[in-house]
Image (cartoon, rainbow, N blue to C red; front, side):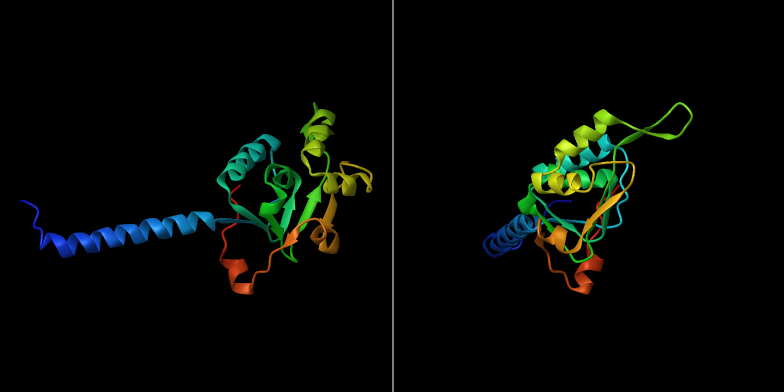
Length: 168
């Protein structure tokens, strides 16, 4: 069975117009891409470094709208500060990097902790240093102190629940 074309002029103009509209919409969508981070307790440093390097090159904006703890906080060093915003719910948790020791207990990894610390922007490093540095005890940066370092993002209740969380 062959193709049936109805009046090349009108149909082709319609198809061309639709394709142009789709390309325009695709361009608008990619320039407005947003990643929302909420309820991320962290994990292995290497996994987060890889994930956030991709996010850095994507040009996407990052909204921190809840807990971002441990290795999740690497986003602060991987993504430019002007592409990160925080909501009133943002809560960053920092602690020393650790490995499992011979007996299965957590043992601080000094080299990984120093690498992690060096990834953070200067205002965050100063905040951490003023609280005794990265130790096994979690410290939290939130509220006015966090909002003084990063621009606020304003989300209505509907928008904040519709955005997908960054996959772990």
